[in-house]
Image (cartoon, rainbow, N blue to C red; front, side, top):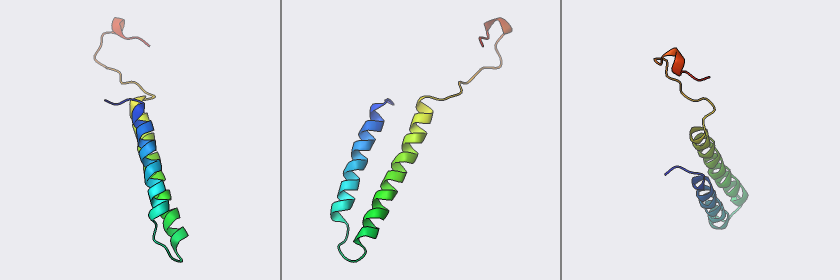
Length: 75
């Protein structure tokens, strides 16, 4: 269910959304502002999701049980 492919699939989707934002941004004097804002928002949301996903996929700290007897605790 949760594996490394989720990051790659999410990246492909984000690239597609960024290209769509580039192509379909409203024409006019604020076109650059629209493009920049949409692409920045899309990339920021993806980065936040990816960092959170990877932090949960490979945690730095492993949970430890405190109710084990001393001879079964490994350090």
